[in-house]
Length: 110
Image 1 (spheres, one colour):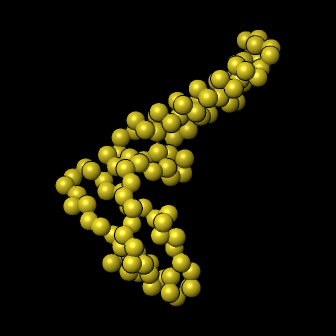
Image 2: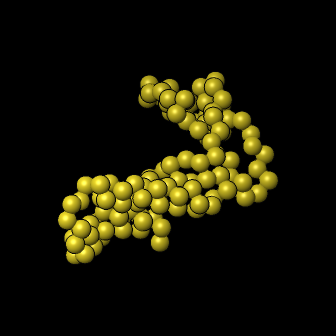
């Protein structure tokens, strides 16, 4: 029913959704029947994890994939700092940590 209203919106405003970029995520908390959804005559692809507003959301609503992404990003930044920062004094490294690494670990984790 909601997809039909989206198709009507497309016709009214003469704008088309990119159906190849549209996805369906079935939440696995209850016995979800996992129906197929069709938009503009095409079946929407199913996904199990999706990034939205910088947060990885999984179909079981667990935070593991988001935490793994944050840790990988922080480790990549630490490696970059190790390769590129010449002067590794404590006060400099502390400022770099507070500016570059800590925000990546704290974003949407609290």
